[in-house]
Image (cartoon, rainbow, N blue to C red; front, side, top):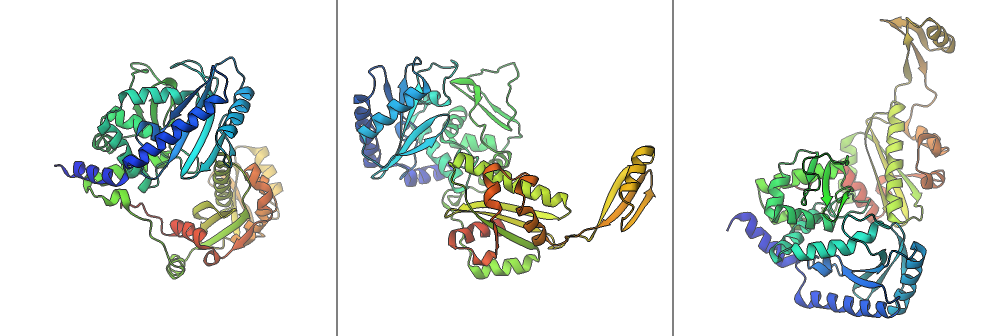
Length: 450
């Protein structure tokens, strides 16, 4: 038996839900669906969808996704109100309100994480009233097409991605969703074929199972485009970042080169305070950690704002001539952290300013007038005028403290601007356990497959 096929069999045995686990999930979903139906208008239907329903879930996940479908004559407010009322009657649990295009409910009930999501009836390629309306259609499409062997391979692909940190469509991860895994297996027929194909991908990549764009251009700009089989106007891979796409390509190349079960069950090494201290000394760079109280936002708003603020901070420091080596950001225990690493804690005291070309007499005169008090200059070099000015602030920490007084000025995300004004600079070695490991992940950054 070829090595990859043998590994697939071994992995599948470890990750496939047991029969009793799968049976209990389906029984719980059926019971909850029936209880929901009793409290809903007669025109409504409850759909059990997702990985557990299609037998493509991983052992221990126990996610139960129930979609309540309403006729299109209802309004969004009506479907939310009626679904919430029915869910609270059907299942006594501590329901939490979450938000997609419209609100839905989530609760932990015993071992199960239950989501109850209102949606509208729709048909393939019909204009949607809500983005979540596709889910029952996905269920019908995939349930009719995936073979038992392919369901196994979907699970294996999920574990492959999960171990590499690439599984999940949350904006915190920007990786491969469960639906996308199912589409890839369906398109390429097996896990091995997905790996073979992805190892050769040269983005932009197009997967169009139903041939919706055969012979014509599509409108999508993302590096990986997987046309949704039931909605040709949607890219099912839209959330996958360019970085994560290339990571997947590299992961597949490495696995093909040396197949091993370690690609599925490797663990991130925990780093001790001593290891981190030695790494900091050996790097010889300037590393600063900012800590703030994290804004209380749902994940799909929180993480884009966190990452936007990180990028803005790095961009501003670079514009101020600090040589930024890297940045990171993460959330832990109600706090947000920003890591900034520069080649040096101090930037040059002098800044060289390039003026206009000498052919622009008025602009040159204005530049000379503006820089009469320059440390050196104005002077001409080639066809331009230059001046050099001394900086008042040269140290990284001093610059950061100044930036924190007015976060809006350098592009901090709206929900982070106020907390940043109360930010603290903390020593990396003072971080608590989980935050310390997140910092270590930056400090010892290396792809797990190399």
